[in-house]
Length: 108
Length: 260
Image (cartoon, rainbow over all chains, first blue to last red; front, side, top):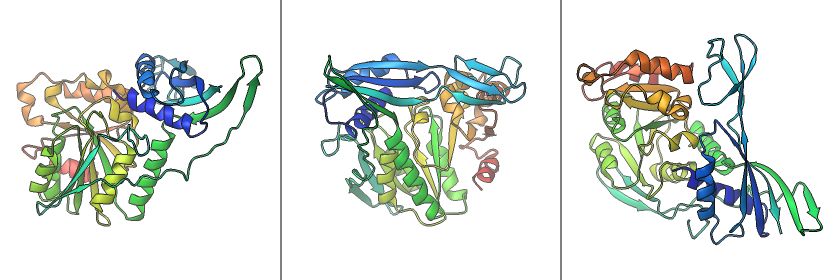
């Protein structure tokens, strides 16, 4: 389960920028990022134990997958990893959905 | 997590096997800390009532891994070394593919072997005539750029050689972690079923090449190679596919040609 490694990376990323006690951590997780929010929330609790992030609330903003079809030009929303335009073309440019970022934290 | 730096690698062990059978243990802890630590509290909003404030970070969660991967890539590039990240389910035939490749590649090959436990694969690589570092990840389900950095330091591959990074057998997690490789290869065997690209799309989306292995078993299994190729290309239109049998050597030249 790679979400534990991801949760540990979240902790490291935050600790590199603040040593204050953290109450809230906000993430943006793309629906095509390969990370499952529920699993990440579960692992976050484990990864934060004994750190200034212990007990912090994890708020995840899910980002939808979005792409532009190079064949017909229309912009499409993607619910899964299949880069397929309704026009039938697989020649699409991914615009959003793979993001995996810490956007902000609330510190005391 | 690691007591030295909190990097989550406390259980990771590296063992080097020379082509002559020599064994060396290494616990080098080389990944840097400090030089990239920005303490840029970019935007601070004070909430007087709650006495908390918001730090706007906007930092990629995997930035640290990606930074180390970029350093691995530069290190390899400076030496003319081609690194390939091999990923598959357990038992798809990655090690067998490498055993045959070592003899036929036409240039020096070294291998970084990733498994949770045992030195089995590094020993097979050594018997096939190449040097290998075994990375045992303990509970870990994938290799990351820090592990590969340490392994490269022990392995010291020669200039203009090929380094194969045989990832932990797993069609899910390794897809997310850049190791600094030049290209990514997914090995899928005909005994696993032709539905894997649709079941594990992230892995196939990340691949430059799909090696379809164990083609010698095609007469005995219900496997539709056309379906596998069609589905893999639906997820990744540019992906190349090379059907081979690593056991019998069938079509092996197509794989060697791709290696270049």
